Image 1 (cartoon, one colour):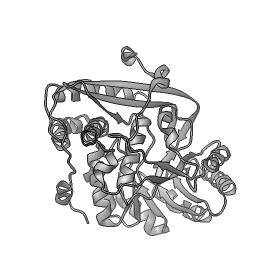
Image 2 (tube, helix red, strand yellow):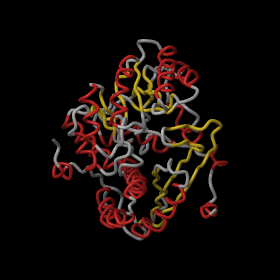
Image 3 (cartoon, rainbow, N blue to C red):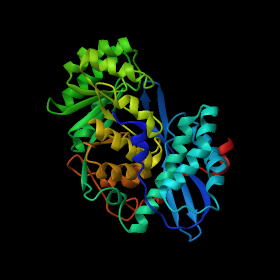
Length: 393
């Protein structure tokens, strides 16, 4: 098992230009969607992209994205956390590398986060800052982030379609075929009858040779997860994501022991250290760090190192806007333990600036522009930009 001291030794680092931070500011893009995205725990009525811009005394700006999908008011909290909690720690200071930024933020915010009971929101906010500094490091070297992290990054990555269900499964499955995909993930946890109907529709549309995965979003008890296994096997589900509550790794291990179905988990874990108990569980075959939640590029890469040591695949969780999507593409391209990238096939206006990277072959092209890999044009998203004066409404 990968130990904590090994994890600490695996902290990736890159130098950045020695310029003082002059400003840290937020941008929020909030787009209503015509058909809400249902989860086993609630529905998503808007697509939100929360960007953090870090400006330096040379006039340059580096940007990262923080995950704010849930709760619906999460973006309002994030404004306060970034402007009142993080900005004062950065403005006026010079940092020579990504590790120095991370050390300042974690040493200053971890204890208050625990006192607050808000490790998640704090790590989500730190993720955006960490992303921004890693992009800046890549820009300094004139390479895309994937080339900074790997000597031989991939040029394209297979994707699997997610968000099939609980409604519109037929249309979503047909969309997967239209995109040339070869794998997809069905949302589960809506009652046995609904789950069975949705799996049947997905399999009938996609065909026997199409790879199917499942995601219960922590919607089952341990007993329910075990009882669902025969049905999942009947429909050829290769792995099940978060079948039970994600804060009990031993329960995930038991689901595998009792059913033999591979387990995927990790989107709701914060900091790389949190992954170690899960990597030690039998049957956890795939871990799913989210670069906008886990702590940014730094913690993501630590998870990759720990997963590689335990023979576990890494398939990043990706349910974000254009910036986190671009970052995730770069991270996936840099890591040979990543077999595919998640791609939400439902309406997502705030991801549209990078949708052109999809190929007709069920893959996403890995762009090579310095830094983020791609120049993201947000002009057409202007109608969704939230005036910061609205934060108190």
